[in-house]
Image 1 (cartoon, one colour):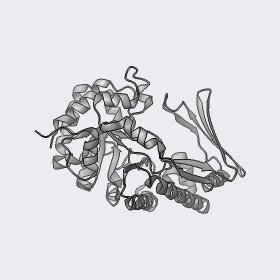
Image 2 (cartoon, one colour):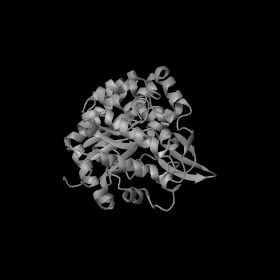
Image 3 (cartoon, helix red, strand yellow):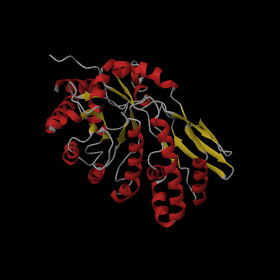
Image 4 (cartoon, one colour):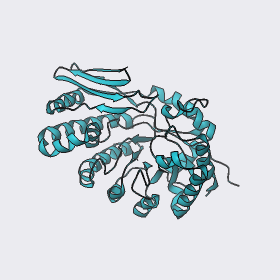
Length: 361
């Protein structure tokens, strides 16, 4: 009998384009989940306890940001709200969230860009942001994860340039993209340039696999905008990483049905947090039908379904889904699609891993 791989060996094997001993299973889990499920320690502790294959996407950046030109950044929590503030010589911009990162799931109440002049302030912030390598934590963190998995830090925290602006304020950005083309275009070029700078620093880190929280979805960007703005930027990221022998994971947690043909043109190693119906708008087989075996596909469990289903319903869904993949199941990593909701029982997480162990190669 083939010896059981460790989580690190299993995931590394897959990202090297080889066949693992069995299907891998992981969870996108942060303290928002474990704080609501006391008695299991940190997300690391719980995933080790369960025997998950850890893709550690929730830790530190491989760089530090240094602000120049009189830019000052402040953040604080007060009266149930989290504030992020940039003070600059050309003005001040603020974003505000209801809730506190870690203990709650914050909801954005106020965006950086509220008026046209705020674009110029935000642009000034990016123009005066430098990225300095921060790799010292990697070795210690790698030891914490150990044989249970691999570290996957962010290649840039800002997503692609247009996606970043859409996340800040989708309605206003969409309007201004077509009515204030010069202002938006100049800012997008600056953000893109800074993304490339961050990527070059991240590419020199010890990490072999990096991630980008792109949140790809046609609820945010049309296929035309995705093709015009996102694909070229993702290509630049992957080209930079390839020069260092590194690979990229593209986070795509939304409605991607009409993006699948465009995503096929990417040179990433994997797409993660792929979300099926009903939060998403695809069946998981749609990915393999469009992409073949080009990518590792990570996800498959709609978080709303995961909260509401029984353990038996979850087991049936997973088995039927995996069996529908045929030989493509070798390119599949079972995971919750985006952050793990606190209402999901530990029993369901155990079942996910149990099902993964049944499908051996």
